[in-house]
Length: 264
Image (cartoon, rainbow, N blue to C red; front, side):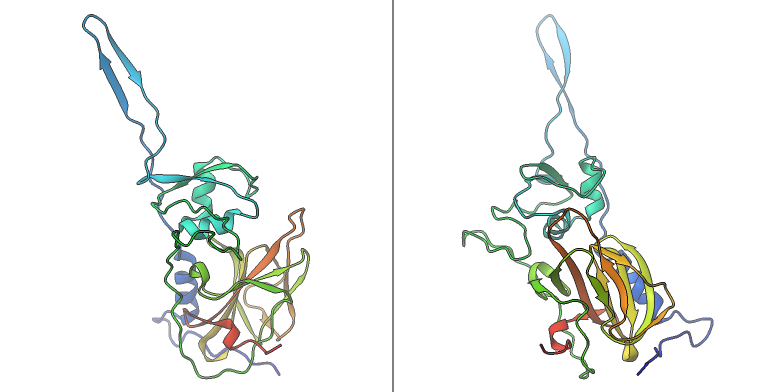
């Protein structure tokens, strides 16, 4: 039943596919923060010279102001504007990820237009004139694999390719268990910029499964796991909506999980 990974260092001068994959995964989505400068303006009169310092809101090139709508969270706002969550929190002096309806957020380093619809996983733009054009995640063709088990039971609220999603998002209840989709070795447990607490499992044939967002890990790096074994659980708090972000990758190329998951 147990299938161990075949990916390892062949000699001391080579970098393994695991190290390369984790490195590429961690740096994806990262941007540099650019400091905003506020110019000083001087106004001169005939006999009296006064210096006035004018503080203005950042221009569209520097960033945009987003008003939080019902159902939005920091993850979805970050995903839409393509700005890391930590950059948004820093720009707004936020100590946590909590948001409230009507809150004004400054989104740095983006020139995207502020949407008129709420940035929720199942959003539908209310006006056809406003279009969000996103490049779908590239489809990677692979040899048909044995079917992967569903990591959780729940409703898919964001599909593969939607808003640039490289996997699927599954809505579930807080404290629900998260299970390994297939036999494999845990090659990464830690925090990533895009998905927060993240688990990556390597399977045979250079396949990987990725689990993240609202997740508490219950496994350690280097641990071997069986298909269907518990690897983590969803966070438990007052937030009503909790969802798991799940990906299947060949090397570092995302594939549509729905093509490999067991048919319900």
